[in-house]
Length: 169
Image (cartoon, rainbow, N blue to C red):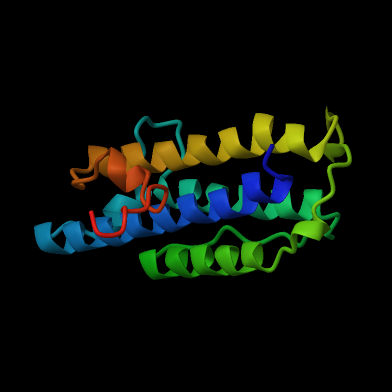
């Protein structure tokens, strides 16, 4: 069985890099079609859903919270105040850098309490039953927001960086 580190940090980084690439593709599409970046960033699939900016922030927050909880680090809240594509990309870059700072030995599989009311028997359970599903919920929502706006994305954009080409193929 893969280690807690191998199941979390590299996987979350790859998918966050994929989200970053989708955002770059959406910015180019918006520029080509004369769509304002604000329209992309503020779009909601339904009125009571949060916009694209929140979906990016939530993916980043999920990674940071997982690291802080599983590494027993003190959590420092990050303001969710990005309003531009450049700011969102900077947030993604900071999150990736933070994730890359994790040493596998730092991750503890001890129980995790979340919001003082949810108890997970282990960091492994927290990762597999909350962090990864929550991350993909927000990533999928962001993908759907961009697709709804006409951005030419497909499944391989979502899976970007997951499958590596076979050398020489």
